[in-house]
Length: 400
View 1 (cartoon, helix red, strand yellow):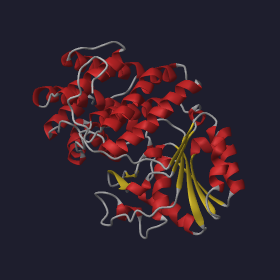
View 2 (cartoon, rainbow, N blue to C red):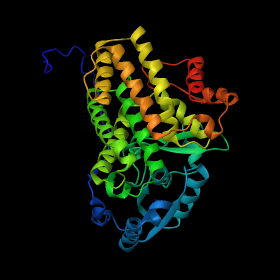
View 3 (tube, rainbow, N blue to C red):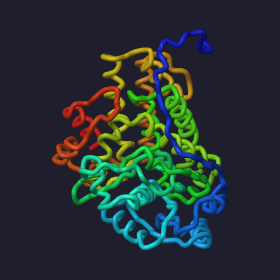
View 4 (cartoon, rainbow, N blue to C red):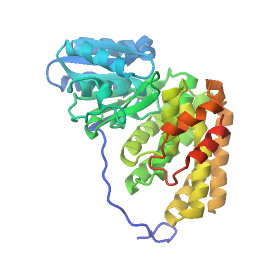
């Protein structure tokens, strides 16, 4: 088989799997299909998780009333990242009713809370008992069906198999994870993101791009996740900055970001992430810094170290092709050599951070003396180059 330019593919097509939602409903106005969806489930109550912002918006109020008219509903409004105590309390509240379906309408944190509650309604004990690296119990995989309706474009939680749970007191941000926890239905209506504030849009977009780029470069990536990740990056590069500048009400731009976010969830669930998220997770567990901002800050220095180390140790046609392809996408013109491609990617990321006015870690109260405990909790996940503790320190100092 030959590429359009005549060059043969030399990399083998390794075996792969793809796991995602049983059903995806995507498009402006598609939230109106919620009632028929609800009606397709057996009789019983609904646990409805919403964020505060969507619960106050006109669209959100209409949807909440729609759900309550369709089924007996336990409505739980959340603010901030879900903690073990928050999830346990919500589950206890839901156990008083005959819940057969969970609906999560909000940002990634709300959807994660819905995922955790849907799972824990089929388990015993606290959600903390089942968290990776925290608890001692293995999730059974039993869960109530979940309809995920994102109101931000960033985490891709509507397509992932984990729920991120944070405990700022104990300083961790860990996952409740099982293949069965991918939401049964992702109902993605970009119109639900139109009222998303600029700061949230910025942070979410940086998270989404980080997830797409890291899954594209992941050592567990496949020909399919590569295709999806690159498509997502293309959509995001086209619309991210325009939406953040003055296009917040542009449905087409918001649709690009919503689709990119969904694809980032699919690719991270199937290919995994890298060192950016390996450090950003502990950062968010210890300090009150938006996850997307942490990812955005770390992206350039981590990529700089990773791509330069690949060039020295593991540069192959596979990596060289990926790097030049991303560089060409970001630059909007062909980039021919590996070195120029690396320079182009790093330059583009630096311009993004400057244009979006991203504050350094110090703005969030993080000091040099804090770096040790951050690094101690960090890992490289599926990054093609594994940074040492000293290299992680260099990365963090560069954005302090």
